[in-house]
Amino acid sequence: MVLVSPSHGGNVGATARAMRVMGLRSLTVVRPRFAGICSHPDAIAFASGATDVLAGAIEVDTLDDALADCHLAVAVSAETREFSAAPRPPWEVCPQIIGALADDPALQAALVFGPERTGLSVAHVQRCSAVVSIPGEPGYSSLNLAQAVQVLCWELRRAALAGVVPPQPAEPGAGPPATHQQIEQFHAHFEQALVAVGFLDPLAPKKLVPRMRRLFARAGLRVEEVELLRGVCKQMLLAARGALPGRARRDPE
Ligand code: SAH
Image (cartoon, rainbow, N blue to C red; front, side, top):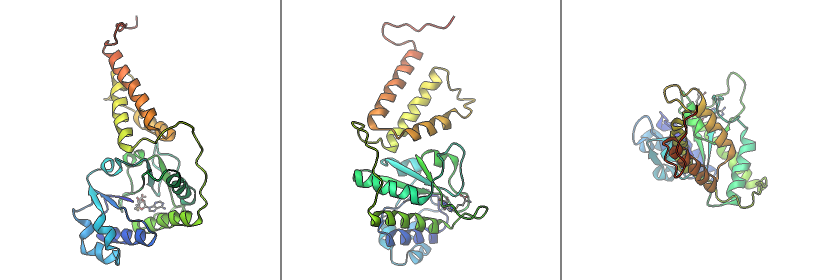
């Protein structure tokens, strides 16, 4: 579980408890409102004995740091954000996560929760490949942070206990999925290449970058595919500099 910028130690403690009861232990906190939130007395009190989860929790500066080695990041959000994937309910997403983990135990998956007051930003949601939403009462559907964590942890456990996991569509020879870090490095390279060929204006980027991000998130990139795309970026950059061997750049007439 990843909590982005929580404000209240009590919510972090209640999250630890919610996770522990459902057999989950790995907690990362991104830039909390104050350092050391996991050892705050409120966190300890609300953890109600799940202090091992708090003691093992990691505090990091950015969501990218939290997700670096992760292959499947799912944003948990009450509200739809522009350019995000379409939100899906927990009973659909959680069995898929459990199924993916059953297929490949080396896979790392993360659920990403937002700050209490503001929820996840557009930038946060765009760093995830799927969005899950608990469809509460329209107009009053926002749960307390730790309660939302509880619902998702329960759905994960329910799917694991049921043991009925949807088969993952087989893609022969597709290779392992790319990590968050590999995908972020590709996005940085791709943006650089798009600027170089004049397709992206850094001063007026419009909606190009979020649209591209949504497209690639939908693709579920594999390591090999990221390498291929980075090869394309490299070639675009060389072409833009007129540095392709034996092929001088020709400006359009
Ligand atoms: N006003 C904020 C509420 C944040 S509640 C917003 O609209 O996003 C804190 C966090 O709890 C959210 O960022 C989300 O991760 C989770 N959460 C609360 N209600 C939820 C719901 N109905 N579906 C999914 N996540 C929810």
